[in-house]
Structures are given as structure tokens and as C-alpha cells.
Picture 1 (cartoon, rainbow, N blue to C red):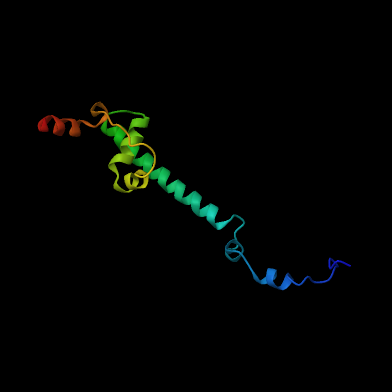
Picture 2 (picture 1 turned 180 degrees about the vertical axis):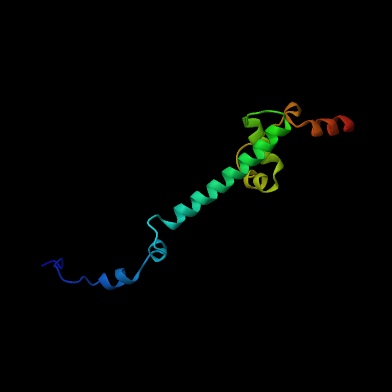
Length: 108
């Protein structure tokens, strides 16, 4: 025989003692996937909260892509998170809030 009988295999003892973190916690889902979903939910809620504030500041009822971009730009942690990715955005003065337009006008 080639060793594939009904008896215990030599690796059965090692496989029985090794338990995953999900099995130890009694979870059906993998721990990493649940953790990743929680992180994504938090970041999404944070961005939408800041973009909503930017929409209110610009007296709009809807969040548009410019508000999301401003939310990333004016939040220190989100700006640091996105600083190493892609091409640096070119922000037109027309898109910036009125406070920054007035301060730029005083300088020039």
C-alpha cells in the first residue's frame, strides 16, 4: 500500500493542535477580513463626515467630488495617507473655500 489507509496519518497530531486565530476566537469569518472591513468602514465614515462639512461650508446640499478632495486635503491624517500615491493634484483657486481666496488676495 502507499500509506493512504484508514489509520491515523503521521501529520494528524500536528494538524489537530494547530488552530487559527479565527477558530480560537470562535469566528466563522477570517480575522483579517473582518478587521479590514472595520478599517474601511471607519475611513469611509471619516471622509464622508469631512466632505459633508465641506459641502455645508460651500452652501451645497450634495457632496460632489471636489468636497471629497478638499476633505483629504485639509485633514492632516488623510492627507498623509494619500501623500505618496499618484500625481499631485492641481487645485484651482476657484475651488478653494472663500477664506483661502481672501487670504490669497491679501498677499497679492
